[in-house]
Image 1 (tube, rainbow, N blue to C red):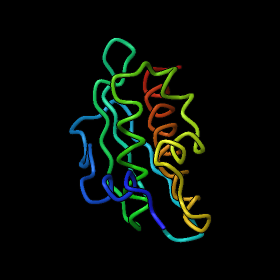
Image 2: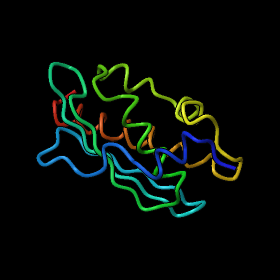
Image 3: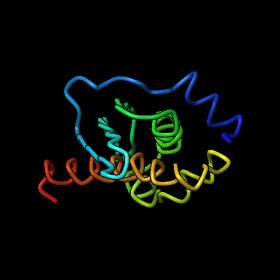
Image 4: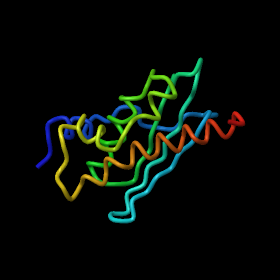
Length: 123
């Protein structure tokens, strides 16, 4: 049902928590299953120096938050904005059809945090 990558990121999630005094905060939720994610970012020299997530949801939502934050950490803001929901699912090795919507949480939360960062910068 789940790939070894999904299981690993669920059992050993990376970047869990919340950045104190973040440069951007994004939240996303999925009305289909009730999962929620909060992403906080710290930007230095145009790059995501740190990314953290907190989630309320199923194993697929936890795994998506973990791998999504790993995918953008250290990347430029522009590269991180290019992250897609399907890319998160691909990086996880796929998700069951009924859990595919969970991959949206990470990308949507990251996009929201970056948009908040831009807003705070007056962009």
